[in-house]
Image 1 (tube, rainbow, N blue to C red):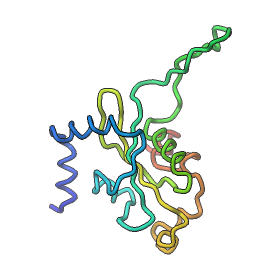
Image 2 (image 1 turned 120 degrees about the horizontal axis):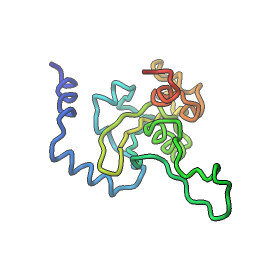
Image 3 (image 1 turned 90 degrees about the vertical axis):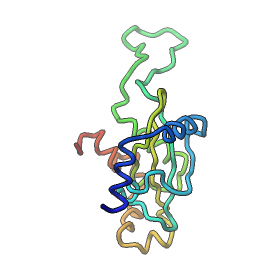
Length: 166
């Protein structure tokens, strides 16, 4: 077996070290830029390369449903609507938040890395479409032609929430 298989198996059985990491992540900023991916095997499968122009970001999303703030003026009871379903998965919401934080980068993909009692954590792979190393790379150069793809449901998580992927 190669090193990738061992890494995949290790992530299937999280240990106490992993649980401590998740507890630390909960106290960091909502969007945190990383030096390298936490799950290198998963990141490389989704298109990450250890070269200039690639950025990895960890983000957290609250678990549970969405609850709107209570209106402070009168409403018809039918439009009160405090609880509602956003119509997209948590991973897609995480990608969108990261894209707003880094407007000069494009979201390539993202993956789940863990959860605590109140949050889910994802790592998002971002690409700089204006970087020379990205433009000249034939395998990733296509991303220079796609602008704001995460907001149009073009990422893997976005396609899944639109019902285009199982």
